[in-house]
Length: 294
Image (cartoon, rainbow, N blue to C red; front, side):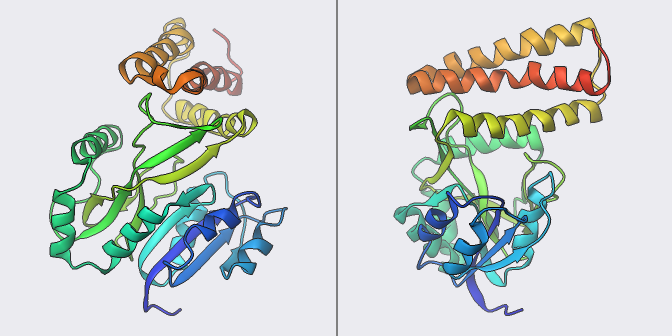
């Protein structure tokens, strides 16, 4: 495999014919190599990706999608790798910022990090992620991975409140310096170096319709139910009350009041409501899988 590319793009897909063209078109001109790992799509995803110059590898579609994301990363040959989902779009400002980072010397990247426009917001968000997932990266060495703030599109509007923004996701990584363990849909990259931030938004066309949101949400609920089983969460009246009432009410109030989700209008309210419902839905699914009742 050729290894002298400056920037490769890695995308994992499954039935993304509605998204893949726009995703690839948003990055035209900034990459040296485009790799798509497709999980045996039954639509036109593969055909469209090939027509746009992608190297396409068709394999199985595992339940944990990060498996195919990591495989896409491993098939690239670039010094830097931009990992994208098919429903994400790179704006022109973000494209220029990515080009700057992959060509800048380490000293210039360090100066750039010190002068980020929303530095405090980004680092505070990173602290919350690390509180949940553990320390990400190292405090020394060179920058080898970057979070990108993500704007999530929901029912016709980009959400900016409710704890949804900046929704930092590591998307730009240096070759062999970061990888996905591929054990959990919400897991973070394991990073062997320092982690920084880009400041221009990645547009995430996640849920243009309620149907698409509910489809994705169903998958997350199933994964949460699996986690409850692995953690051997109690099957008693106290946990029933906790997951059926306490957690969803707490989450709705937290996102709507403390994180000002109400400022996103009815989209923000609907998003918080269905997000809160993942707790009782997952717990009931967990009990059902165990053939138990409270």
